[in-house]
Image (cartoon, rainbow, N blue to C red; front, top):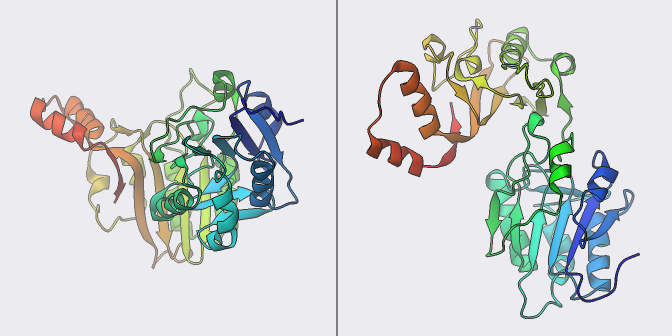
Amino acid sequence: MMNTQKNFRSIAFIDSGLEAQEQLVSGIFEGIEIVQLEPHRDGIVQITEVLTQYSGQFTTVHIVSHGKPGCLYLGNTQLNLDNFSKYADQLKDWFAAIDNVSSDLFIYGCQVAAGDAGAEFIAKLHDLTKANIAASANLTGNAALGGDWELEVTLGEGNFSSAFTQETISDYAFVFNSSPIFKEEEFESEIKSAGVSDTSKEVLLSIFRSFEKKESDPQNTPTALIKVEDSELEVTYLGINLSLDALVPDVDGFALKDFTDAAKLDLGSISISSIPTIVIKNYKNANEAEYEILLKDFSLAEFINQVTAASGVTVNSNLQKSLKDLGKFDLSL
């Protein structure tokens, strides 16, 4: 039963579609109220009902659900860029009764704040709720699957504090992503069923098999996400310690329009910590296929440090600082 006293100021809404839901429920810090969203009802309506019923009591709201760029999955519906107007009045009511206290809204769904769609989504949500917002721009959850528990994108002046205990963060074996995650055998079967050409299939599998497997950490099994839209196939690799040359496999018919000589470079010792995605347009036709590689949160400073260390070259300290000041960014090849 929900506690009705005014001193309970935080609440977590956990969507029923998440894996190991009971582990998430038991892993919430004591003192945070918990509501599990019903799977066959509109999740936005359910959240609105609770926040309206206990009007003004909750200044911090955690929403834990599956997501994708610019979209949250809640109950039997989505909150996305196309239906904000439908839910605008409800979203405005979430924190409307709170006076003279800032409100915080934390969104854990994978990649909700990623890219242009994510930025627009967070801006609209902030505008309607007036809350400080922190949201995930990458995968949320298990590190071996490419996830973490940071909410990288913020809007407003709130301070993010996770709703989950460290034990839960360490032990949770899944990510809050709307797409299925495939291991190698499943991955090969999935791209075959998608009608991928033999050349593109060889490229995708070559990259997959290039992940370095740590014998000391067998739980870090390489996996991948697959997204298909019309004539475009997008694969995001979630393994660890992928070297840069693995992203430019020596396969006949494979070339990157802006990086055509990459396969000739000796990059075997250069690993990348960013999550790579390969996009193939016209993936069913080997002769018309176009390849692009996206590296999310790429650190040029880290890359240059590895290149110079491998070659024995020393980088000027001022240049090192300038590269570090660039921070991380999304790189397209």
